[in-house]
Length: 417
Image (cartoon, rainbow, N blue to C red; front, side, top):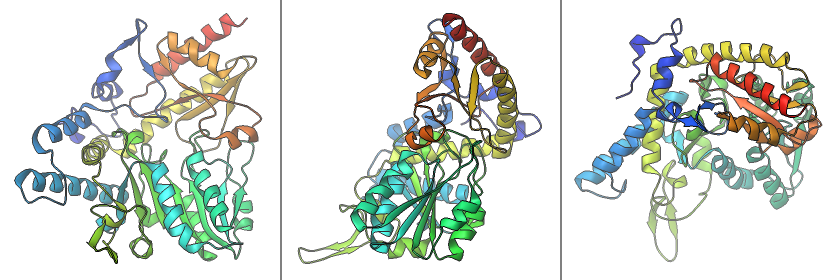
């Protein structure tokens, strides 16, 4: 049972101290100092409810799914499919059959590239992405273009990190078969206008895949309202376990796509002469799935429902506004990505100090941030930096965390005088 209950927590009374109590890891000390966790964009921490749900599965229900007639197998299958139903509701997909369990966003994008993409693209066709994409929504399309002779095109962004919609519209041409774009940038925090992008792409006959890894922890996602053809997410970004993710795909597209991998549970029948494949989603879930991961993801969805995504978003926006104002006043600090309406990601550089040095010094103060290129090297090049330091927020982040970050940065600057 979660430590939080929706009747006690509303958008008007978001008690971050109580939210933090649901995350056991946050109570520890690092180098003798309280942990300040500002790396949720890399992976979020896990609430007790998720940990307990996964432990309970192994203690009480562990068996392989879809294959056994014994009691444990039936209970495991029921729990696994209940998790799929929770994801369907979370994304407002029309049917549970549109929800495919994968390892994460990376596998979801690769699945679409190597099934839908490979079956649709020919030499001379085009895939359009944006300049802010994570490598996971870039490299699979490069690989597909190399395999098919298609061309990869890139929609630019402006100096504050906003996607140039006019340029994206111009680049969608008669040979564009797919537009693949992040819902929220993992470096900039930019929130892209997905509904408008979908409208532009569909008007030219192109399908749209959305990388939603950084969006689902922060805002309510409705795939039917967005109108996208595919939506990918990772459980570990949204307070669930690692090794589990989701590909949403419109059913008619999934049914027309060939399998991604061969093996058990994705077949109707097998002979040495021919194999008949199962319908989606089983067609794309070859082998024994990550059952505990799916159940943990379902528990994370329940947890988010109890907090309320609107309450989380309002709280994070308050902390983000406080952080942006405070960081802008730090001498020599440059924020990378200042688009209007962004979510809780703060990438920055300090004049004369390498981001890795910033991260190392902050770590000794108990402060966890991310440093490096964040799997977005072309985006780093766009802003003329090799790397940034990145502080990212979660439902448990507080203004006290930001105050600790500011004190830590003062320590960094003092050491580099």
